[in-house]
Image (cartoon, rainbow, N blue to C red; front, side):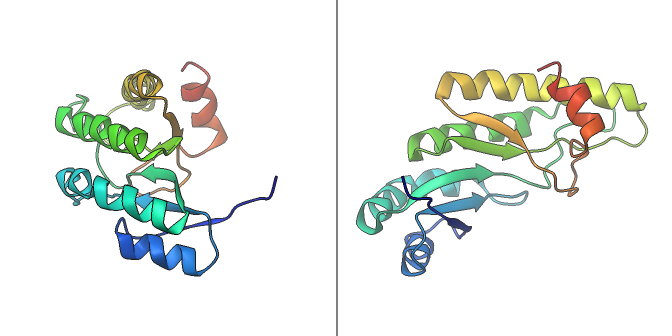
Length: 159
């Protein structure tokens, strides 16, 4: 089996074509904070057609920079819903992985932040499992603290 490489691209037919012209077999989408999930949902048919035309697959879909926990320690329901919707898109487009992180709330104790990250990620993992999509935490620090071996052990070790 030959190894296939990929690249982060725009979630458009042009982005898929661009990756194919580089001889790459995969694209990854970073659908970060500030982007309307409904726009990506609308693009699904166009993206499916481009994958078929160019022989490219979606390797992962991710979202960075979006707060999952508010200053009072509550999960932000709208962002949890965005996560579910993006997992649905990943599943529909055949991506095996959804990448995410969880923000650190400075006015809350460290262990409360750990608990809140677990709470969010348990929900995301359970939903992803139903859709056939694995959840990965990214090691980027953009509004994410689940990125070091200490947090991985305390959070991933429970999930």
